[in-house]
Length: 249
Image (cartoon, rainbow, N blue to C red; front, side, top):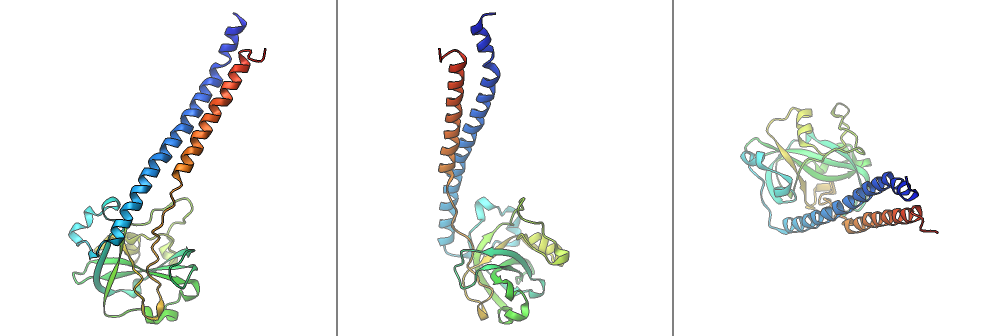
């Protein structure tokens, strides 16, 4: 077997590995470009929905059709009575507040019972850790008929960084209306929740209007990074192959 053929055969495995690596890196770059398109569409959709006039909250008969793509961040209004005894405090860190309070604290999720008897969980807003006790914010426990305007939100999905909810210990980390319904044995609870707007509550707490509406869009930079790595890997293999085939002679 000639020396040239031996050298060519010696490039087969490195070539396959390089091709796989280039394909993976390029694929990640394309995925980031797709994510960029998705993020830009999301930003435009959220801007349009949050600026639109508020509409009545979807009726209970429409709940099975509610979905993130069609409905999330819609401005809605609803009326009813808060069931403060079934309040759930979801741990959070508010780093970029629009209101006075920030830092570690809790989202106050309170069931609101409508006139029909159906229940919608309302995220009334943020309270700092030292105001967790209801006694420290008694004025905000609105009694009687209440009106809420806010943004329709879907349940918060879990991830590796967020602990699971532990209703037995009243330890909540994710906003999930169905888990709250199960913990308090509530019936006819909506599959979505409402983030209340910044309309002040008596006493100033909970602090509403803290829905995050700014979404980072760095996907183009990420895509260029992956494509650059793919090109670098191709270049490295090219130099290796050139040297292997006797390019230095």
